[in-house]
Length: 285
Image 1 (cartoon, rainbow, N blue to C red):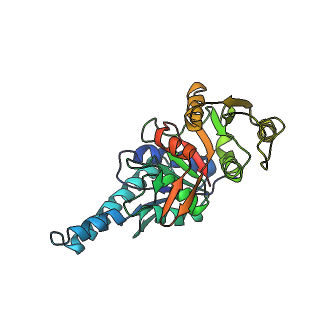
Image 2 (cartoon, helix red, strand yellow):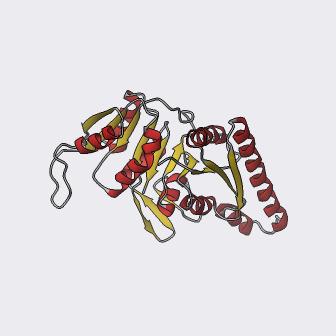
Image 3 (cartoon, rainbow, N blue to C red):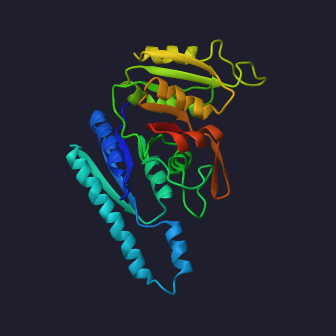
């Protein structure tokens, strides 16, 4: 099914232009409704105010945040007009951006965000902010998230894609959600990465790793090649290396992690890809 509602993160960051361009392209391809979401609140800003409240006026502080969100949404609307998106909406929310985007993504087919900024990418959702925003939104909402990197540029249709495959619900959901994108890829490279291809007791095992999912994709009319890759290093590094070798424009993967009180702890592959990817990544939890 095509994407019919797409949510995009709206802010004044330098990465916004590529994010808007990608979201607008997908909205046009799918004749989708595009929603720009800006936040006028963030825990780190409130924390700074509480520690400096003798120097700041709360009303002025909140007004400045509101103005910044309005500026972000104005930039989003201008980009949507320039890219000729037919159905557009803006929402300014007074909550943490990760919470706001997760809520909006729950009611959408896709969320388009930017690569997380500096910080510890392995722990997200703490009181000091969310350096791995894409993963947090994916885990909170259950919706697919397309992360557009701050370097490397926006998504382009008609180029190769890499699918990181393993027999698990996260990879299956990511693959299913990515089909509207994969239909525009010139070729789909299915990557099955393991430190050793052997049967693990109690876990499902494909007769030929990647073979059945390649047939599934081929029945959707896609040109598919399977790569069985053994690695002694990091799986995330191997995936990004393959993406670079085949000149991929998109990486599709499951988002792995778990919740521990006000924090989301990311799996190693998710953390590595979020940290180092220079191509758009679609992930789902």
